[in-house]
Image (tube, rainbow over all chains, first blue to last red; front, top):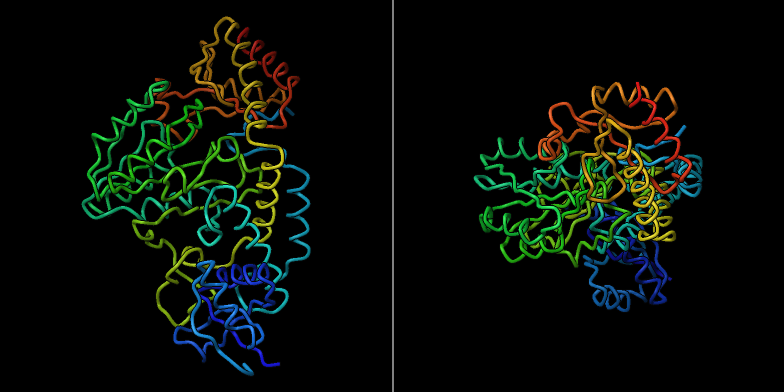
Length: 75
Length: 377
């Protein structure tokens, strides 16, 4: 199954997101994001199955954890 | 040895703190926040747990918990970071140099006014009213030490927070002596920046401290230190948001592990139980030495700190005599000349005995005996 990365503002928020998603039963892992894929250099996010992205975004919105773009499929 | 200098740093540390710090030294080989390989991730996870624990303890989300090397570093960020050009900085008449010096520097650099407000033990309303009269709405930073390091005086930070919120002022709290002894709720007390050491009442290792950011309705303080952050590396400025915004360079992850264990330990023992024990021992000591001819006890405001002198003897001499008998106290101005001036013990200072959770009644007895001996010389 393909993996996607939901980007966050920081590594700290990626960890907060991971916990939030875990409580909602969505598995994820904190990952660094290649500088080539961001505008500002090294970034962070949570890696999860692409099929879980919509649900994950809903959870993060509910828990007020800011997230950015989702980098998808084979990253 | 009878250790009575817990206001400087607590000793001993709980077993759990030593164990966690040591295991972090052995097991955490990665640099937290630099790379996502398993070694870095393990260290980052431990650091995050410290933020969670501290955030829960002080009423703030984990991302608002900034790791510093001590309370002084946190105070420098908060005071200098929030000071406005042409604004005003208000500090109490009981402040430690860790507040006074950065406030003086910030005032000089920003062309701001630095003013003292009087504190009135037993009359919080009068203290708050004094602050109200000095406030310049929208451009004032009010700093308050929650508890004095030389006499235990407690300031009404909830009331001051309320006043600051109503007056559009920034409120910075120095919790160096109160964290772990008195309840502090950053959100409920409307504190914009709480600065605490990890190594005093939180029973963590030296080299740790926290800047806990509150509502941040005033925006974030400016950064004091810039460097690598493991985030947004192309930007020439530090990241936009805490905590990474204020954490340039490698973090003290073993320290964070130990600090986390210390906060958890304090939570398990209970701050009420800790402060009741420390206050009771200090009261016993204070009352006993007050009866010794030639001894003056300078403050009777309660708390875990006893400040005293012996007629005809210098504070340094008393301290050295007690040290010779295995009693560790601190003599002099305790980095708080302003507070000593307010209490009337400047310029010579005094001797301070400060109690911790691991002190016993036997420690009190030995210390009292030693004071009796030096007074009799």
